[in-house]
Length: 151
Image 1 (tube, rainbow, N blue to C red):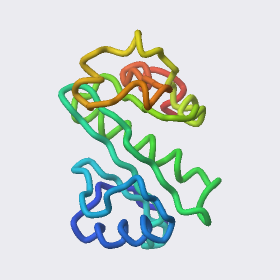
Image 2: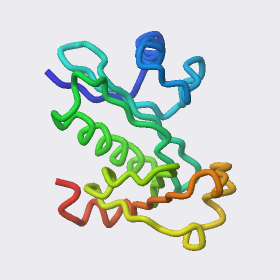
Image 3: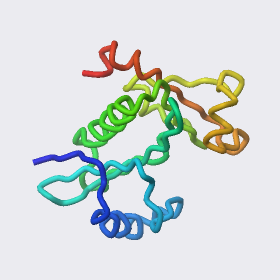
């Protein structure tokens, strides 16, 4: 059975184990973001995703599925759950900032925007250095739910 749910305090050690075993050095394993979702397969935690939410904006900070569980649609389910979670909290736009082009998110309706198109409010709220994160993707949440990307 596959379960996707909001992380609880007991998940922190399991997430920390994955972070350490997979050498995910960009993540502070001591401070789990408030808006963390986990995915379990047969009761075993196999992935997680972090959102940062401020007002009606959200930023996908990280999405990870353990290598043995990739290419099974689990990452898609996790991202869709993050989008749904954000929507239930009144989020209108979700962003992904990256050093590399990440076309994976296009399947959900994210599109690339330039730093000039990115609202200054987003950069200020999430304290993002555009120079270090040259690729910006944006998702209009309402459009996601009105499109085939939702299904």
